[in-house]
Image (cartoon, rainbow, N blue to C red; front, side, top):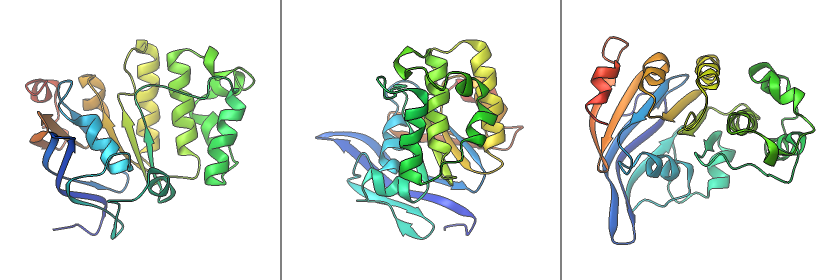
Length: 231
């Protein structure tokens, strides 16, 4: 049953790459301003799940509902237009464009040219505003990708492996940013850093070989030890 507070409800979701099935009967829900984490080993299907919600992969069966409307079959552009933004793990930005030009592209898509919130979360981007994005560090590129995604005030951010390869100080900063973002938007975060997951998540889905093996809710249940058995 769909909770009226849910901004995303996934049920019976099956996804395949050709003949190879990647997701099996996935069911999950996300409420407004909730932080949901997905944990599991490489190849568990976590990124496939985010890409399916975001419209980059078409499920073979199942439903993805947001605010009463089906997202299945929608283009990624249309899904983003409904306030669901996807931040991939590759940390790819428009390398030949400056930070400002990257933000302008995000603003063009959303028609939101107020960058003050972006600079509040990531003051360093204001300092780097004229630097070409290709010259940014991995952490700075991650800041830029999140900054672009929050333009337009999305209701849900899908964030894939945000801290992979980043320095501990950047990870701590992103932890604080995610906590602040959750006051205004929901997040689904795929993440291997269990201390980070336990610091920010209201709910954790543990995936293994394309199936949800466990759903952990409540701070007392979300511990590194509880999550670790699924990694």
